Length: 127
Image 1 (cartoon, rainbow, N blue to C red):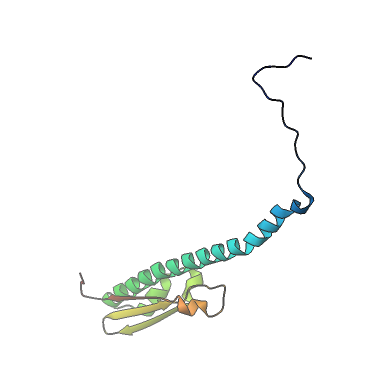
Image 2 (image 1 turned 60 degrees about the vertical axis):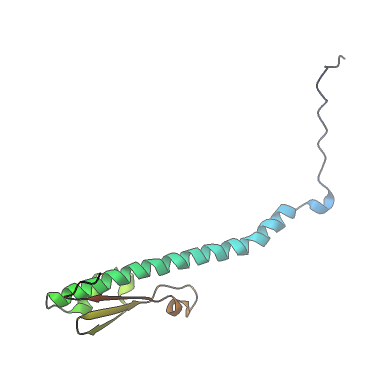
């Protein structure tokens, strides 16, 4: 048997200690609740952001309906997708259309904290 110069012999693989078996599984199980909470919070933030955009759109549609002598409540509801129509409150005062949209929430009561409010005025330009 000849030895090669400059190269070390491969080290034998050491078996993991008995106490370390299953450690990765336990670590994954420990991280899963954190991952779940972060994903839940991200979904809730996306729902609140979508509700804000939809509320702005509904208020503008209601204001346009006022200018066209149409029902602003019907116009605001018609500007929304089906899932959001039952979650919309519309208030008309003079030339102002105020809407409040309750976003979907996985925790009861949280949707009220994340309500999206918007207001649009018919017949005037605000800058």
